[in-house]
Image (cartoon, rainbow, N blue to C red; front, side, top):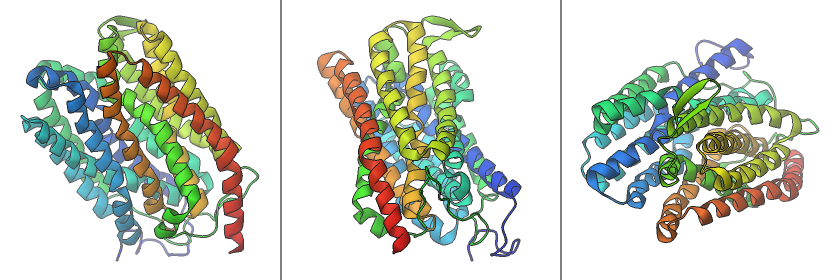
Amino acid sequence: MTDTVQGTLPATARVSDAYRWTQLAVGVALMVMVANYQYGWTFFVPDIQKKFGWDRASIQWAFTLFVLFETWLVPVEGWIVDKFGPRLVVLAGGIFCALGWVINSQATSLNGYYFGMIIAGVGAGAVYGTCVGNALKWFPDKRGLAAGITAAGFGAGSALTVAPIQAMIKGSGFQSTFLYFGLGQGIIVVILAFFFFAPMSGQVPAPVQTANIQQTRRNYLPTEVMRHPIFWLMYLMFVLVGAGGLMVTANLKPIAVDWKVDNVSVTLMAMTMTTVTFAATIDRVLNGLTRPFFGWISDMIGRENTMFIAFGLEGVGIWALYMLGHDPVWFVILSGLVFFAWGEIYSLFPSTCTDTFGSKFATTNAGLLYTAKGTASLLVPVANYMQQSSGSWDRVFLIAAAANILASLLAIIVLKPWRKKVVAASQLA
């Protein structure tokens, strides 16, 4: 017996919108609790480097390993969710998240941090993939918005803890910060797992067919999805866009340090903070807001049209940050633009994947596509080695900007007409 809503609602009865939104809210809360395991990492890097003397590129392999295990195991976790329901996977995810940062708090070697971040990655991925998959299943009528709101919990979830984490690192040390934040967030995930359910057949609206939104009525098996060429086009586009954002996420503070703007005070909107604190706070808020915003836009004008706009904006934003980011005010503003134009991939790609391949195996299929984030993370250490070898971030920024422009063109020129044909053909099968 799965941990869906059996025993409380008949399998054929439509649930109320209030119930669907409640499940979405639980998913958002879970995402907030695992956000720091990725987005908080950048604040620990300088102190780890200072204490142990390791080079930055070696330390950042821990971040890459986190993202790899966060993403590449999601299809396996998704298969368990699709078969047995979300509760067990989220429960295990919370335990792994807490354990990962506890290991970090005790680590004295690079391998120790690598292991800790691998464990945290497994946990964060289990929670992330489950929450996104659940949103895609509960809201076929608002798929872009629902996936965006859920992903926003991850993108913006760490915004309120930017200052507390930095303050605790400064006051109590980074090791105590790993310990207490890791345990606290993991325990809350475990508690929320008991309130999280998946929909049963008949409880949600039918797939949508409009001029701009094409949703298949066929449910593709994960093995079919992996053999379909259009899946690999989406995968390539995900990697192209994901790499630039992950590079900035992992290196926000190191970039600011290299450009000598990290501790400069900036005043915007009647608030004054150091450049890094201000940028990190705004980045996380905008990285969260972009996900429901562009998801909602995509529900109206279509996924590919939205990708063209957002990915193009990301390319321009990365280039502008490279050109103007040595000024602390522009660093704050333009890093915010980069995150705003980047974070929407976590609503657009899952919803596009489910529109194309169906909702029955949505957690697994979207998880397969989500592994592109792990592939993109492999380019983060490459960016660091490029910077170390040249002493400059120039090539890194220019390549990232060009990759985003390429992805925006692929969305409108190749993906849009191709996906329309694929969905139309599936209706006749």
